Image (tube, rainbow, N blue to C red):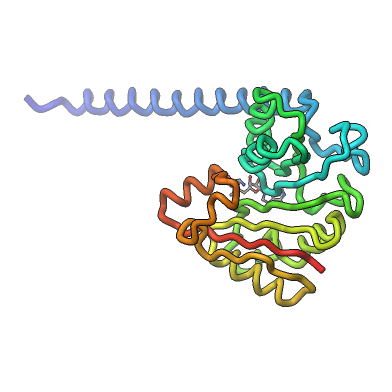
Length: 243
Ligand SMILES: C[S@@+](CC[C@H](N)C(=O)[O-])C[C@H]1O[C@@H](n2cnc3c(N)ncnc32)[C@H](O)[C@@H]1O
């Protein structure tokens, strides 16, 4: 027997009410969980949120040792920061990202693992000089940063001349900058920029996995790297110094 028109209308109306309600409920839950995360981020002693209080005294005031400091920029959930901190207790690691919820996840894992050699900065990367003095940093890792593919956006790339200048202000002489990316555009762009500034490329792997270099990069895979590998993208790596 055909369903009467008014019943069909009722069914659609119920569906729309339920659907809208579930979106509303989801928004509230997500909003609440974000505000809880942001509040606990502010209370977390290993997270520095727009607060350069340790400038020039990371070792004496925070880490309480004289170990070298390594940065992971655009760290997201900070797989390299955490992975390297476990492998190299004789070094200190600081992950930097602007996104609070990703830093929150990373800081939670560092706390669960009781890692004494890890900290996080939640701020814009171009403010690094507000957090560190010249020669404070031993190494920088840039992991799967956005390639900014739109015309005119290339200045936002983390290997643009503007950002290289920022790194130079805080790095030790000839210190290594490691770039790991799935983006051909970012990889080629970085090499073009490096050809124009005083620099030296030490390692250039066009396909980390085909070249069996994964172990050399500590076998660490980030969240985005895993995603790109599932999409069969090639992972590229550069290690270079600014002279
Ligand atoms: C594609 S995600 C990669 C995250 C992580 N490294 C990974 O591989 O899973 C890029 C990250 O860079 C961060 N980011 C991009 N530009 C930034 C900037 N100028 N300052 C701080 N964080 C930035 C974003 O917030 C984002 O978390």
